[in-house]
Image 1 (tube, rainbow, N blue to C red):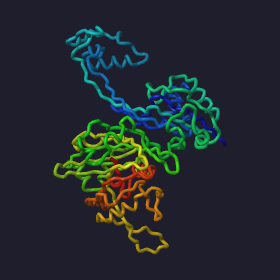
Image 2: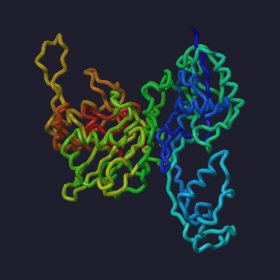
Image 3: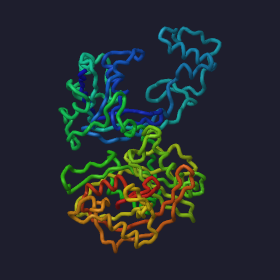
Image 4: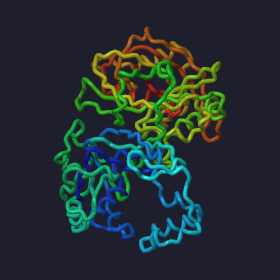
Length: 522
């Protein structure tokens, strides 16, 4: 049976698609979620919260980011100061006060004025008049401010596809979106939509509708070339179902002086904290002259004597768990390539004398480090948004810790095509050769003839600083590992910006799940 697709335009100065919000932290997904769009349609149709939405839930759903927008953080305070007297402030019997509050909250219950207060009323002390409003207040009723952070997407524009066999249902939704029976907003009441919501109804599937309609009117901007849908299917966003934004939490603003410089993290003029668009956006051409790299860096200053940190230092699997603990809930449990989906890479350095470990975690999404024990930190986590454009011919400094390996023959017949035994290089000279094979001269392809992936930049190998690092291992029965490591420092000259940004985003070499492969550009 033929299916039809209703295209819905979601654009506004601010949007917020909460996934796991709490009072003190209100997050946003970086794409509209299906549950939010169903709620939007139900409100437009005038349905109550208790009304069934099975017909809406059965819609196949897809979303395309024509303009991903910029995540912005709102520092918000609630309360503080002295407040006007309320009934519960002057009722001294708390059980009866609770009964009064419940009665007042009920739609058909008696109001506060219908209760006898003679036997359980006591005036609070220190009642004064507010000098500004004249309202009676009590000095004993002052409250401390509650600090909350609220995340929004600024200047974002999305195209949502709703697919169903019943065209009449889609027509009803389209009409309701333009003539809503209730107020509509994009996630929160402070985010009203702008422009027309319902676009048109096309025959086919969500994928074919997105392909046929590359750009809806009004969705213009630097990222408006039209992108493939993130996911198509009933009730899901494919692999990006929860990758894109459940909880950008734990983003504290202070950081230890010198920690970023010690690890070779980009200086302040190479990033803008007001730009947090995840991923990279290279120019579309055969060999672009520029490419843009955007990612989040979490700089964690940790106490090496804390049991969690100490265990991570001696066990590669535990270090992997520590790093990934900041990204729980973004992908389904057990989903393959979860780390790669979120673009998580890490590196660390330790000062054993000072018992200090600095861990840098790069990701496409902000990490939530609130789950780690506070005692494990020596300073608050420092979150940096790196937003940098690389140009062909540009020279920049870099630092990386890699797992340089070679493949030894497995001894099996060639017909079996068995992969050789991977062995780590153990000398600086061998590491230099390993890295030199990945340098890309101007005009060279991104992949060498022997299949080695190049890095989009070149350098003089003799100017590189190479230091062998202690081997990391793990004796876990399920997956024992032993990882040889080497640190490489120096300067690179950009020859292929797109390839370079891919290496910066995805890492270099093997063992990227075990704090290898992150290239930090200065």
